[in-house]
Length: 304
Image 1 (cartoon, rainbow, N blue to C red):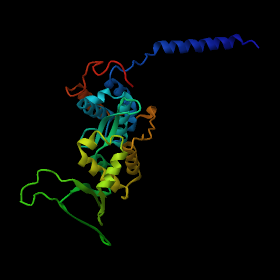
Image 2 (image 1 turned 90 degrees about the vertical axis):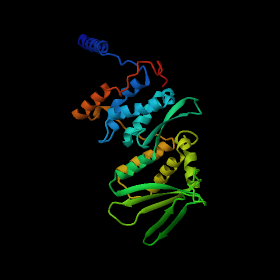
Image 3 (image 1 turned 60 degrees about the vertical axis):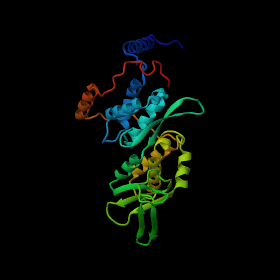
Image 4 (image 1 turned 180 degrees about the vertical axis):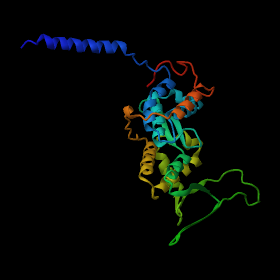
């Protein structure tokens, strides 16, 4: 059955409108370098960051961490952006006070460098302290030769640790003895016995071997800090915490094991940053500390 002329006119009109919209809508230019690519993901970051952090601040801090490690410039751009997005979801700032680390590692399957987020010792403590349920949370390493006693009683755990600081001749010990175990302590805000977890070095090593970055990055350069972080990870599994913190800690552990966090970002519902924050961020971008690398300096072609 032939179409009526009115329907044809409508089809032509709609087609012309679509063509006109395509002609007048500027195409998004491909990112010329890693910094531009990260900024193109700002809407996702803004949708993920908690209230105490802004997307603009996270971008600046992440870029500072990236510039300090040239290998991160060579990583797949998408993996760097995903690691920064994971920082946003956890509310952790990479490279600041051992909260989180952006670590390059080589994917054995593809042979390419990729970026992985490693949650630091202080990062895990921050996640626990945000619950408001604990007055303090910490971990310590016990080395060969230290005096260490741990007894679990009906009234709660009793722990005594005296580090060995001098040798048999009374001289300061220069070389650190091997770590034999670590322990984590969480003291409740409301009082009562402390939560204590002693972790043998064999258990810490088992956790290290399961990490994608077991043979590189902080596990090599900062072993004690990673051992303490692992101890806190194990401790928090026995702590009463809020649902929000439990989700964040679960996501952090999945990242450590090389799994992806569930990313559910609707950029249409991105909360706008406050005018005060926007003003501060604009001033920071214009300051000498803001990234100002010329286009193409870190790879003219996208390697993602």
